[in-house]
Length: 329
Image 1: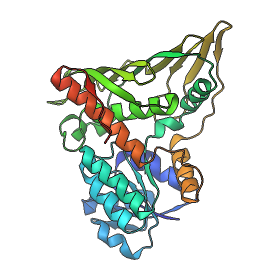
Image 2 (image 1 turned 180 degrees about the vertical axis):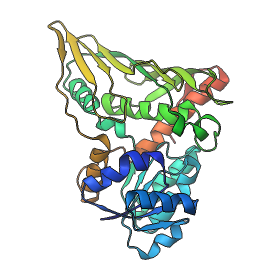
Image 3 (image 1 turned 90 degrees about the vertical axis):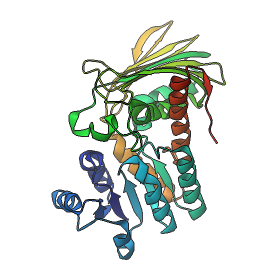
């Protein structure tokens, strides 16, 4: 299968080029609004073609695209790919505007192409182990979740994430969408209501670089979540508690494989075995399985829509000072 990259991004360079090739597929072109950047990216990664617009892809027989340009540009790229019959792997958040995300998911459905939102964290072995424990009833009746995804945003990728809301900047649009997908994957549900506070700790110029919120789920579970850009010495963690046991995970909210997950119950504390599979390779592998007609285990386009809805609810709650309902459609 022939792939094209839409966006000469850091994540494409560090993770996705290798993930696509490791799965046995060819990357035949890269597109960037900056021709110089596209050409340099193509030279670095030995990609045959580099363009400054997507129309140049029409004669190359592209079958799938990975979209990682800035978030306000995602919609146009997805709609073009869907119209061309190309399968879509799109970075998160799908868009900055909710209605745009809806249009993207619908366009791919209408075109009959597979759409994947690159919520890679659900492919972490810790996430998969926690999901299995919850599904097997090992925690009993679930009551609460604590999730801390507060990190230090590396300087090479700060840029628009700290300055430009229209491009998807701010810690909520950048990280909270991941957390919404993680909890939906593990718990099997999205929150119905959110109460949030955000702040600026000095890293970002005007946007929030710190957010804390309480999420309420229809099942009765409540979750506390923390997203941050400016905590260089913090450790990420995820805890899920029930009346028969608790799961304690560290290091499972990362691009790299790894982490530790422990189950605590009346028998004591047991660390669960975890594999070291590359998260992005699993995304590509499962996307191609879905293209072949197998069950869709990635976050699809509609999962990306729902995670964006949660992020928007956090921002609305923080702005209003009120608990708000998450609006999914």
